[in-house]
Image (cartoon, rainbow, N blue to C red; front, top):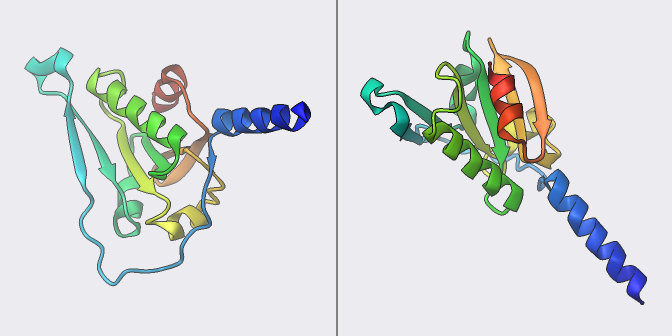
Length: 156
């Protein structure tokens, strides 16, 4: 009887370690999509320089324009019900506030529950999924919670 308990504990541990499985993407389209919500974070260690890092909530309407950049762009595919996604989001905000992310990098977030077509387009099967884009092309992909060294290194 103890064997199934051990199996269940192992499966839960593996699921938490690798991230959540995304729900099947919705194919619903809305007639009009609101402008992306922008969260502005000011780097307190460099207040005198007024350095700001923005994390933008992306939709299908503004996604393509957002990733067309000469500089690297990080897109975090996430869902509000996913614990590892929430942890990764908190980490991104903390690194941004602390000025640890390159000033030239842009950061966006895609809620896979609300933007199922984008999740499907990029083959998102596990979340959090972090994609690095440059000039509209994917240059690197990560699945699961990533540490500061990995993300900062990928954005340089």
